[in-house]
Image 1 (cartoon, one colour):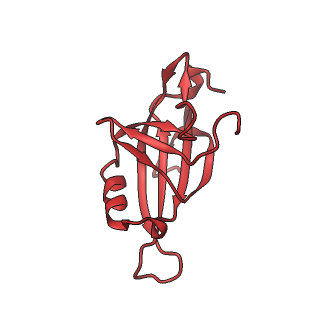
Image 2 (image 1 turned 90 degrees about the horizontal axis):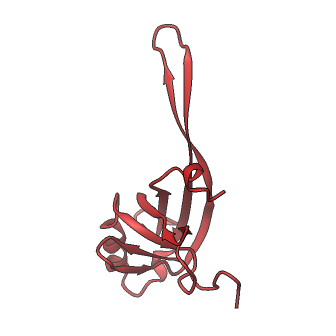
Length: 139
């Protein structure tokens, strides 16, 4: 058994619904700079306002391997812009800071195809921490 867990990730929605992310590949599990870029239209001058870093968790799910593809897709689509609790490994602990779960929101649920463009058989899921992690001390 691994230290932090060995099973696939899962999320728990604000309505306490547990969704296992089986058949997935973790694409990103790292901090990302949260910034605003303002460009003036006439002069082209740019200003960068850095607000901190947020934790980003991106996975690609092979939903074609699921027993019920439509049910899984509709369940995940229902979590779009919802607050969730992230478990990197379902047999481990959720992402926490000071024994408090760090809330994430589902920023993107993007279906795409693997080989044939009429069959949406893969799905990209992007979760972003609601708080800036510099304030939480996760890094």
